[in-house]
Length: 266
Image (cartoon, rainbow, N blue to C red; front, side):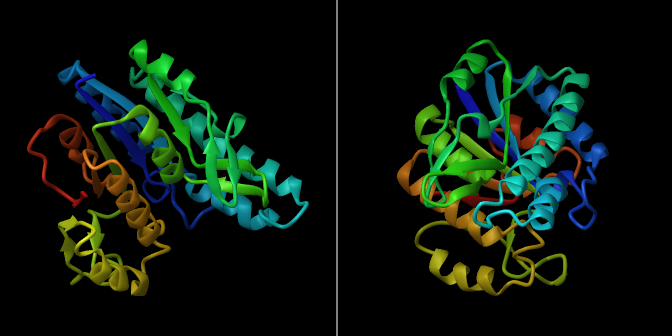
């Protein structure tokens, strides 16, 4: 595989996070078409897709009290809600001729103190070897110390990246990249073009203070997780882009000189 990409579709992009269990099917369908065109244009492109749970898993977790000790009903309901969105995404991608294969993380995931410590990798490797597109999602997971936890897509990507060695990771959300304030609330907010260990301390304060940390899907947590990953895997490149503008994901997957959004590197 000369180019192997992890692509995350943010829950804020593929669902309306203000309305329970409301998918943006038009966005999912457009992204699926962009992925199909990218695969057609780049036969050497291998792809793993992940997505957030958006208004499916997050609403269920809050409604049923996920994380309360002994509340296993909440675990079941939250996992089921995340799986419903996953099934919808898979069906749309298949309808657009992308050979996607849904793989439920909670079937094999184990965590310890909120950190992912085990996940089945071999089925993903076999799917990739056959030219398929594995599809994962943020999901519930059993936790050895806490009982239960949420394994986010970023957590799953970080675990898999050290084992599968993708060349690039693309996080596609509702905004164009990382900004110095919430761009949804502050139109004058400026896009941060590049984040490295050298400049993160200055950027960290801006992200923590941003009104939009929750609105943009916890941007601070995403950036910190990806920066930790590229420090561990220095050859890996991460880019945060918008899934809402037509053509961005297709260009990100196909163009060697793609320079939109925010670039995270070691």
